[in-house]
Image (cartoon, rainbow, N blue to C red; front, side):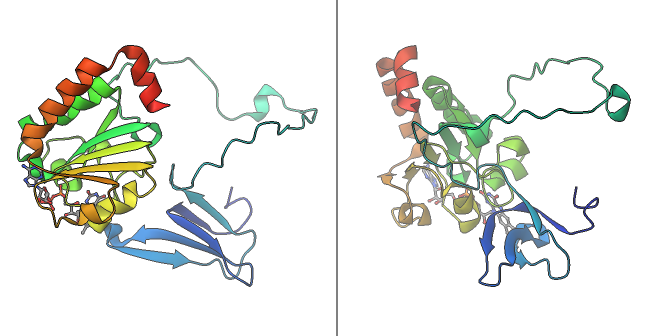
Length: 231
Ligand SMILES: Cc1cc2nc3c(=O)[nH]c(=O)nc-3n(C[C@H](O)[C@H](O)[C@H](O)COP(=O)(O)OP(=O)(O)OC[C@H]3O[C@@H](n4cnc5c(N)ncnc54)[C@H](O)[C@@H]3O)c2cc1C
């Protein structure tokens, strides 16, 4: 679209602003995510940008608002469309991450110490009907697939509940979870940065605490109460 309109496009933005002179200030990670840069389209119009999913807060639902249906006659022949639908191929990968849209996300970091202990995160997520994620070092170690990484160079999420076990709360992780309604952090170090922005902090060994928490939820939750927790 930008090419057709002979203008520029700033893709994958994490923040958008409009300056006093109506210039669009589009901010995105650069240099492999080590810096944030703000890009202006100086010479061409329109100004165009795309944002990462879940970067923008959803507006609150306003009951009673009506849409307007506008009828429009489309003069389009099949030959005008350059793509053809041949068939639907079902996606059978049930492990595929739906992190960006999950209401509850359970996440693990290096404090879990091993890939085996990371399974404690998956077990809690399973009981809560939640998605599971991780900090970057777990991806680098090959314990968790890259699509589960949360943060500046991973996914941006906006769940209602984010449970972070053994995650320090480095700024690159924080930017991916700042939009969560409730952050619960489990960490042995009471001075860990994650306690600066968590809503609830639990200072303890996550490897011992997670199984107990999973068991407590397992006892309390029926399939219906899980829905209530998410809603
Ligand atoms: C360009 C760049 C981009 C990056 N992008 C990302 C990104 O997208 N996402 C991301 O997550 N990181 C990212 N990082 C890495 C980031 O800077 C941190 O290094 C990383 O988030 C740390 O991961 P961690 O908290 O799991 O590990 P650590 O920093 O090692 O922290 C482990 C925490 O676990 C606690 N702990 C230890 N034992 C236990 C226990 N038994 N129970 C409970 N707690 C325990 C410790 O007190 C500590 O706070 C990026 C870095 C750079 C330079």
